Image (cartoon, rainbow over all chains, first blue to last red; front, side):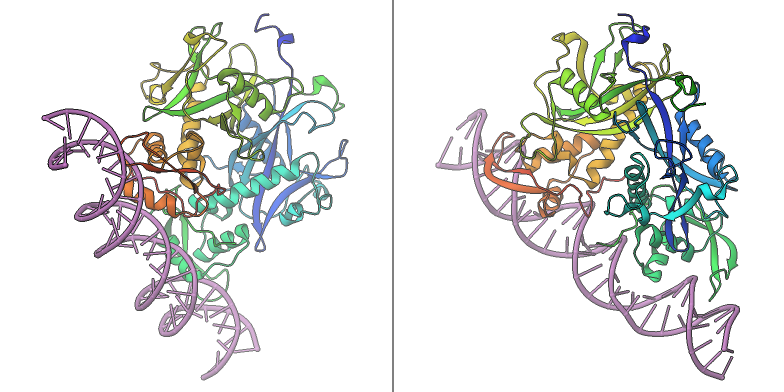
Length: 248
Length: 248
DNA sequence: ATCATAGTCGTCTGGCTGACGATAAACAGC
DNA sequence: GCTGTTTATCGTCAGCCAGACGACTATGAT
């Protein structure tokens, strides 16, 4: 049989699904949208959609991200232009034959990290998109809070990726505004890991790691108390030695 | 338009490609097969194939692995039965619209780590499958040693995944026979990272990490010199603190 | 003025790593 | 048997780093 014969191989639909994470009010939150049509009509799900016929996977994920949130992807090449930038990376691919009851769908999940946003938007319908703390979906109690399809599993994998990746990379800065304080960065770590960190040791660690933070010269009193120095993310992407996540 | 309408979304072919790595003669080697038909006829490529209509992605990868190498996947659930077991995990998904000149193909690449094998087999044709040091394909000199499609990039990503993952996990034992010595494990690290490690510090580190190695009681003189204790992989999968890869 | 809040700098101690000396147990060759 | 070679294993020591925590600073609120 010829390799060009369409009957020689099965046909799949390919989608991208997005785990969009942010930190709001000291808590790690994920973006979910309400499904308007079957299957799983009315249930919450991860944003996503079909990949177009001539579209790259990363481009499809970036397109879905801007459609759902208005966020642009922060391209490492186009540096310094991170006005409303988010970090976007491929997470994993989910292809269980039964994962979509309609047909065979392979979903290439992506992980997006964004600073806190004013409000979600989904075609202007505020009721159909919202941020929720990730614990809402990670409970072991099965159905309560479960997302459509296998999206609970995808979300869990995305959260785990974020939690481990901020250990050894500067990715936590993707949750911050372009200028931020050491305290704000610490609250990001605390929210993502769900632990309390010692402000003094954290300060020593992040300011002592070359290339992690560069001071902008400004200060702020956003959080009350003594004014804090403002920083931008430095060029370093890999932290060595890494940030240590406290045991248990 | 109905979500069931096949014209509402594009159709893709989905493949799995395998980065199969092993350590032979102190060198990290990858399995490649020679393509028998166009495109890229005669060029070396990663083993792989189409996912079947009702087949899970991991199952397809495991099927391709056993077809190409005879290796069974070492299922963490079916412990202790690692006679000819390999480690298999999803690596990443590659979906550039132009990556296959014939049609739109999305490939879900997987990474397999295996102990040294007697010989590759590809339908009995020894000429069409072989192990080669990964440096053969990672050279910057463009075409020389380049694999078909985007397989050079996939291989590079797989090697990088293996190199980083043995830092913080017990995955290096997947390159070893069921029973191995500390020296053999050290030579795995040296081959994968391409560096020399201090035998004394390495010994202290791996024997001092709880759950990494469990002594079997036996000894061996496989490598000449003083007999070495034999170990099996312990239950620990995550190493904390990690093995440190030497700088530069 | 006093307190509360948050940020920043120091000190100390224990654990871990890298460098490297020393010993142990096998084999090869004389 | 003795010696040299090879590999494994144990020990020592200094330096770095993280956790624990004291102290001080600079703002706003009462």
